[in-house]
Length: 294
Ligand SMILES: [Fe+2]
Image (tube, rainbow, N blue to C red):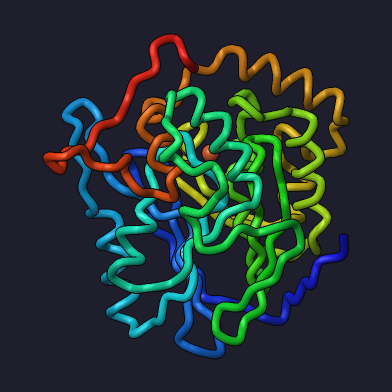
């Protein structure tokens, strides 16, 4: 697959860090128009209290409005397991199409079973406006963008390249953070290694934007690096580490990791494109907890 890379287009990228989940959401603006996209938005949840709110999403909505931008796309790099998407909430206020990788259907099938969903839960990706295949192109204003299928963390993971900026989702972290875990259902360490090589085959000066940062070793939160920096310095895949080394290391590390705190609500909402499960007759909504299901 050859991808239509064009580093001459330099979008404005504005980051919004969510300290509750260490997620970075982005507004990406076409330099030639007022069109923009939002990548990986966050819905706030107090899981202990079963309460949702939208302070983080409202901040992004206010930014889009204050700068008179037109929202054309709401991109989900994947079905997140550590935060809930606010894409439908933002779409109601600003418009735009919600897009995710085609393999969302695989993820829906897996977690439809885990959460014992009935037949009303569609497993065909129809909750989304666009399902991306590897190499698919789309436009934000005059800026041509494309999606690269980068599975391994999950089967539906995509890296979205917009001009000289690539949004890598959960493939790579900053060089001192390494890589994402590959032990969720449908994850695969070898596939993740191959996907990371795909990202690193973009031109050296491509700007890479992370979905998460945890500030390893006490440093400040960061979210932007380049292909060249990752190739040279990434602690899990940089400096020519082999596929075998990576699979061994990743598998051993993942076996020691706890489940993300918000995995249970996140999956149920995000596999529905960011919507809560349907309301009962009184209008109440509920999330399930599968006992020993994960
Ligand atoms: Fe993730």
